[in-house]
Image (tube, rainbow, N blue to C red; front, side, top):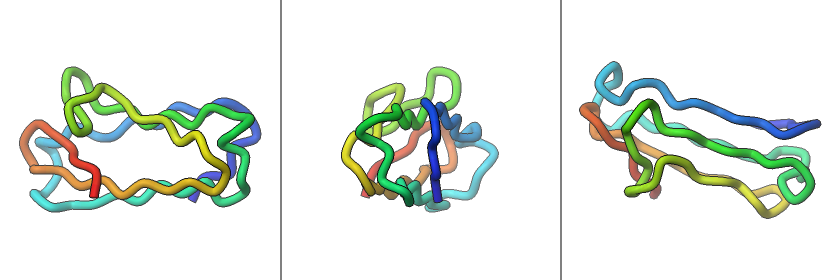
Length: 76
């Protein structure tokens, strides 16, 4: 759960250090995503559905992400 009172950058761990299928859920619990940037960053050159990062923009937004356990993350 995220309660951002300012801009926030979250860095995912290296996918190779995780188990294939391991999942993360990020949720803007207090609805401040419209006024504070909540950015989820992949590790190093890794990607999230082909991008280096994703941004939660809508109040109370959430995203579910899982890893292949090697080098990538995917949104589901």
